[in-house]
Length: 580
Ligand SMILES: [Zn+2]
Image 1 (cartoon, rainbow, N blue to C red):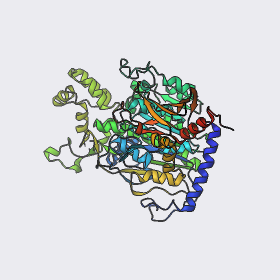
Image 2 (cartoon, helix red, strand yellow):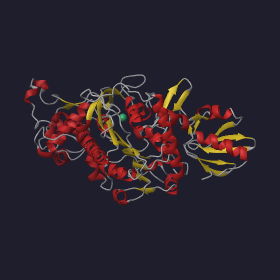
Image 3 (cartoon, rainbow, N blue to C red):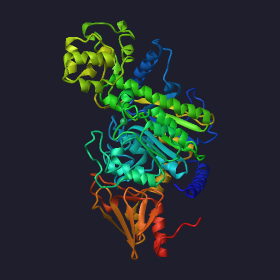
Image 4 (tube, rainbow, N blue to C red):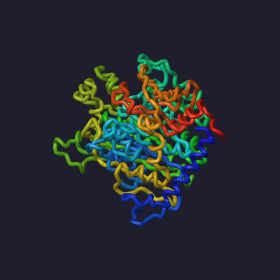
């Protein structure tokens, strides 16, 4: 955003906060009004910065496993090392969605980003009797208030959690429109995977599939908009740019435990988090950063014990980066909460002699987690490689990557069938209840500096954004009102005609005409043309579509800025430059 625009936004925002205070809108919200010892904390100041961290798919049980893994890997002495996140544990989060107990990531993180429990597959969008309506996210609210904004993930940037913060769609799989909203959303830092979605020249991870077919090169667009576009760890470390797009893989980045072996040029989640904090914290208006431990969820889906503990440990290093900054800064709130749990992995007796009547009291650390600490790869990836291989190859690989040198005949047969994961799981006593999401409450972690209350106790997932609104002064409802006006309803009042040109399905154009003048809005961007002259808007035009290709005039949402400028230009008969 242009600097002058930013200053104005800050002034307006401050004025609105003052009004809210006098109207008493910031009353205590139950669930986080007191600290663990029951004492009310008087909110004496606002937090300038927020680091919202989401360990996707992390259950309470998998944190236990990761803690034991981390603890024993360090010195083989149980009980003397905790995870960094343990130091800020404050409660539990209920994760159920609108229609059931087990949520998908899309409504799960939409609850965190917008404060609404939504429908399955919806990102940043609420289903109502009037259709699917986009709701402003905390990332957008922070941007509109003049703060810097960023996202750090290890999945493809368009996956559900980041999409929930930076885009609006009725289905999480609408990657093209989600990516465009991210590119044109004026966010300062975006780091993760997903380069294949930016250009018609880019290929997917297999090196063969072309994903984008419309001839558009969004990497060029990013460069034109002043971003430093980077693709590897060295570029990440050396860049000094204040606007940063880093795409480190065509699709997802490597699992943390496999990164050094497969893709050493990729940065870690911790390295990306450090760079994001360094970059965003230069803004004296503050920042909002969302960091996702994206692949903890995938390890859960995969029932991969070596991957889940290493992914959580990698995420926990990023939590340390956030906490180190927040403690030094004194104006930063850090929240960590998963959107749901995945896989239902638990350390128990399955595989450790339960079937032959052995007691759990005979199970030692050596029998279980210590074995995990010796793993050098995710069991899913190596397992796929070993499918159908001969006995010797299997023995060598399993010794090399997992330190087991006494495989039984039955285990070798199981590995040949592609089930290395299951062999490892039984050897370490970890059983899984599902290949999908589970309904368990997830851990709530919160750090707040002196003078700012913490979020504590058993809270609903929608309480998390309410808490962040309260401690920062950001206002989601006001921003929804500012950024997502229904185009047809709003423009009909002034006699304008709205139509859609969807001849290029991924890049629809909204035409608004009145009195011989036409405003063309490029769908999912902040750009348009008034009678052919290029203009930019404060906010993105969003077309809501359920199937990704059929558009309807009643489902177009535009920022207030479009309406204001359109009226002004029609009246003047031309584009009017803003007076500075
Ligand atoms: Zn998820």
